[in-house]
Length: 449
Image (tube, rainbow, N blue to C red):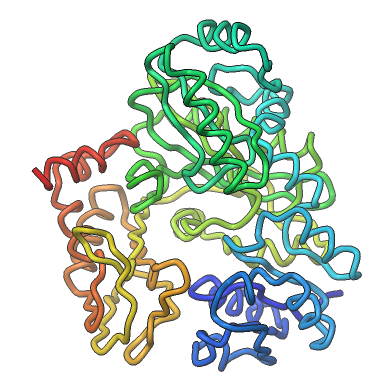
């Protein structure tokens, strides 16, 4: 039995995990960099250990330091949160070799789903629909490469097989540019992900980004927990998320969810995960699986009433899932706005000290944050300082509740993207719902003009 969990992360997700642990009676160990010494979750942890200076490479990405902290603190498990080492198969292996529990899937599953080509192959075997394109390594012969792209049909997109976070992707509309684009993407992939492996698939011009949240245990049980729409993105980075995906027939989502749960059973997956799809012309196309908790998990929690982080912990300590698929229901609608410390026009980071702080409240309003008055936003990490989540009886109710919540929220001393969120919630297209993944980029271009 696990009684102590080391949280190998920082910011709001570290506090979120800490609260979930407390709800299960588990002790917590916070590891922190010198830049985060005054964070609330550090003060509130049962044990807190500094693991290095501010740069992530010398603290939150230092595997040896984290493992040493776990062993010296008596932790039996490590929860990686999201980002940093959450999808690092080598780290998961080191945790397991040290006799500790990694709160997430096995290293083999992380490795298989981290390779986008291998993931597509596994999903096709499980009957999950994929974006048109081969799930085998690309041929080296230029003529054969051109034949692959011709068979898919232009435009195509070249992607890094080990990529993520919106990096390592380039669209090719002109066949004459295929080989140069391929070489450029390979070099980028080598530098960013340590592997030059890339693949080609059909580029869908106006899709939505739709996700299926799953949770699976070590006893062969897997559930899908509804859908999300994360189409409002800037440069492939999500800005606003919602659950469920608006305007898609429930029967279509249910059929897809069942395939995702079956895929988990087939590959022996355990823990929380997310299947990501492009939805275009009434059809779903698998793009990748995230083998961790995601930033946007609260909208699923709000619509299902399920604490996903606590389920992660319960599964990690060997418990069977405490509910069945027919006990999972989606009620109402939820929205999440990511509040970032950045200029709302240029999107330049805005670190510094918060000197004014007021968060909204009331029925159906939730704020996940580690920040507050006097908090100093460091310049070393992701700029997100809070997630504002609302739940309404339906989407229209949730939109109005979010507009009110945004009007009440104040963050002073630094610049944030609150003005951007307020403007987006006033936009007719956003209020209607169902926009595609390029909508925000077009919106920003019009605003700039």
